[in-house]
Every structure is written in structure tokens, then in C-alpha cells.
Image 1 (cartoon, rainbow, N blue to C red):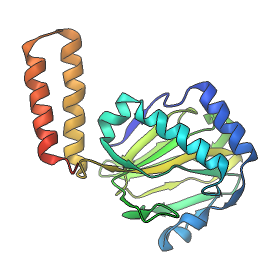
Image 2 (cartoon, rainbow, N blue to C red; image 1 turned 90 degrees about the vertical axis):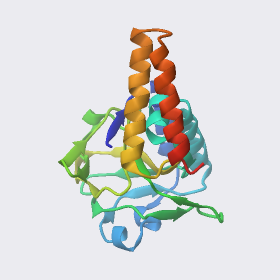
Image 3 (cartoon, rainbow, N blue to C red; image 1 turned 135 degrees about the horizontal axis):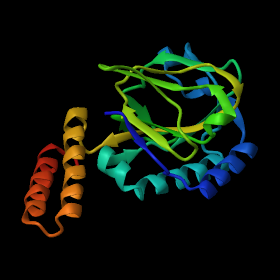
Length: 226
């Protein structure tokens, strides 16, 4: 499931992120790439564990936790601390798939990467190129969203970032370990949750809402790792 989640960050939060990114220390983005990805990756990345990275990450994780659409779609169990990248003219990230398991730097904790997130922090008119292209059974989907919006997609997907030809592309990215590891089951639960909300809005207090909610939670209970 490929899902656009709008307005995860407010304009003020995006501005604060941009301010922090403007003074943060940057390194070659290949420091966090796996063997396969390192050969395809050409960008810059904020140093993990820097004060700026910690403040940025805390703000984004808090915003994700407060976003009902994201929570419904991802059913997050664990969130990898967000990372931050920058693409300038000529930079790109070739086709790759994310590592199945990632260890949180400096800790013994590992996370299964069920879902990937890219949160855009530059406006689309600030740069040319730089589209995130995600491939699935329906083809390749090019994504370039307003600052503060994110795209959520299965970490099993082959994906790449097109070369930037003008300006600077800033973004955050991270991975989610979901309570429900199977993408098909997560999609069914998401569709059911959205349908429950629509029925409740159209027919407040209708007994069908209780019945559908019961089905939702029994399926979640059956499929969840947590």
C-alpha cells in the first residue's frame, strides 16, 4: 500500500526543521547505507546523534504519533529514529531495497523494517528532479510532495530517487516495524478502519458501527505481534 499522508508537520514545524538543518553537521549519506545501497547512493546526511538530529527526530516522531491517518495505516510498534538527507544538483539514489533489519545506532535494539517513510521538507518548486520513485505490481510511482507531507510505502518495494537538476531537496526518512507485518493484512485493516469512520459519520450510533469495530479489533488481535 502506497499512502500519501498530508500535513504531518505544520508550516511552523517545517520552518523549524529547515532552521535546524541549516546549521546541522552533514556527512556523506553512504554512512548509513547497506552494501548494495552504498553503490547507488549519492547524497548528504545529518550526523546521527547530533543535537539537531535529536530535536528534529523527536519532533517528527511526536507528529507521527498524533496523526490518526498514519497510525491507522502503519499500526506502528516501533519507529526507527528519523534520518535526514539532502540532494543537490547531480545527486541521486539508484534503485535499491531497504535492509530488512536495522540496528539503532549506539544501542542493542533492532527493528524489522516493514514500512518506509519519506517526509518532504522542501517545497516542490524549490528543486527540479528528485522524485521518489516506488515500484510495485502496478508499475512505478513518482512522488514529489509539499513540505510537511509524507509518503508511506512497504519497505519491500524497490525504489530510487531521481537526480536533482536544480535547487536542493531536503527530506526526513525512517522505517516502521508494524504490529501487523503483512502488507495485505495491514491494507485490509486500514480499509476497514476508514469504512468504519465513514459509516459512523453518515449514521451516527448505528449498530453496524459496533459490529464493524468488533470485527476490526478481532482481526487486529489475531494478526498483531504486540
